[in-house]
Image 1 (cartoon, helix red, strand yellow):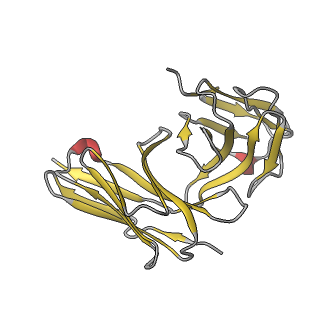
Image 2 (image 1 turned 180 degrees about the vertical axis):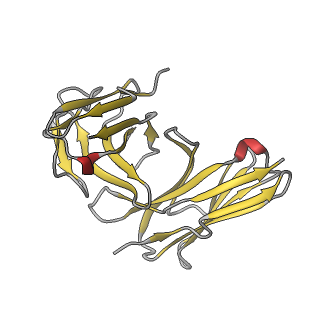
Length: 113
Length: 112
């Protein structure tokens, strides 16, 4: 059974730092992996989707990598800003017929001005 | 472009009452789903639909019904509300079953 883990649960860094958020999964037979951010009291916003055949995806200051063999994805945020403060979640879609995403519990990121 | 629209944003019910959470998307997405989010439990899938007329159960379907009569709408019905259904409910849609997922703003439900 696929399990998705995000460590740490919370992270606080000064503004301007580059940082990495981690997402680990136990079954490497994935179809794709998505990263989302959730602001307090709001819905989730899709940040990046990486297909199983891809190694990384980039959007602005965000770069997501995927290493299926090690069961790991990282979300790199460059030059962090207070507006990046949010909870970041990853979700994995498996290759089987089950469409259900398997979700990590998220990392709560605080960027200190 | 409205995206995924959920109504109401807030609702208070008494135990035993029924209600419907509305979800509509204007992106012509085939896949739609309902999640609930609870502290310490993360996101859990309630029901999903891969197209008009097709629905299926997710991880926590008990106490909820759905229907998909049109591509745009995917309402979630609470048949007889219980305090355990106090939660934040999110509707989400994507172009395909494993595509990029777009979420609504959420509906916060309290059952007394």
